[in-house]
Image 1 (cartoon, helix red, strand yellow):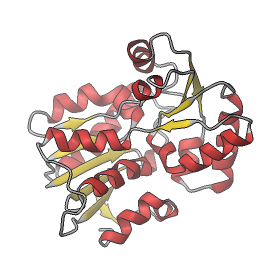
Image 2: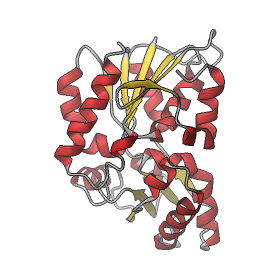
Image 3: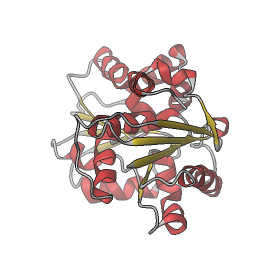
Image 4: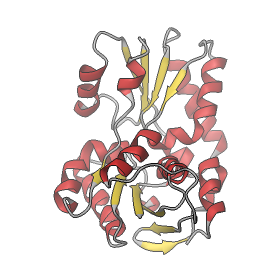
Length: 261
């Protein structure tokens, strides 16, 4: 069994780690193009073209499923990716966790890239799943790029700005970019520092990983053995796991299982 994941950069680590926890025996392919980051400010057409290149590089490894572990790519490119790769390769998109967040009764804040914030896609999800729950969309310029480069100071600045913009009465925060899940504890701490009570954080990694397994008819088996392999593709070329990835628990989990090749 082989599961591929694609993203602009290391935002795919959260979903990859979730797959690894559910199926340690799965072979993983991580396909990204960090040289083209960030995707958020790019036009939808540009994002779609770049996402298609990254997806095709992953598909060349003949996985059983492909996870689009990127909210921006899912917003703009998912129909194109599915048209190009399905039905031979199941494609699983990433949906911001608005539904489970709103189920808590709200109010809800959604942290996302500027490109996703206010997009018709996100607004449609709010209408469909949030109902009468108050929702505030919080753009987080620069946060994904700071996380990509493990720039500690820039991460802290961007998180602090987003926390300051978050209404004090919110009960949950949707992490609407896969990169943000890598710094969830920093987000939680920043919200506390800005006077918010304990807030539930909702990411998509676990749900996306479980959906990929369902699409290929495989059940979770957390104790499965032996451990699967890891292939890293950067711009379509086999490479090492980026150094910045090792700054996050998810990256260390993946690197510890097998050589990062």
